Image (tube, rainbow, N blue to C red; front, top):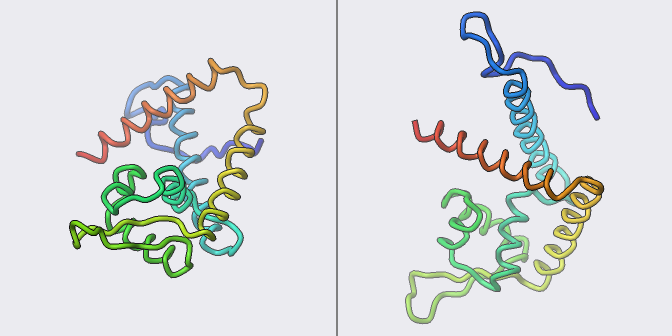
Length: 165
């Protein structure tokens, strides 16, 4: 495991801000490290032709499960912005990974679905993602994983509340 960076982060104990529990400061450091790793993963995926960014994989996996979805459904299911989904669907369509069809009853609505190439790519990357996580957490108890999910959910709530301010 790489050494933990010791750069100051928001919430670390500073004399002027009062004492903070060491474990909470370490959690904050881990959250910042996770967010930085996510940015690096997205950047590397954009640079390389053989990798796929997690946000793109999420869109493709929603389409894999649903069969087809509207733009609004993709926004809701992936928690990405409407503009981000629009750009991504345009790119995926250019790459022949998805197709669009106009709704027969409401011409303003477009349905998005995977092409055969999109299904193959999605299945391959989903398997790699699942296998990577399964291998990384072999030996971790269900209780520990459930606790991790609870902590991540709580951190997400904190970030969402800060974003609303």
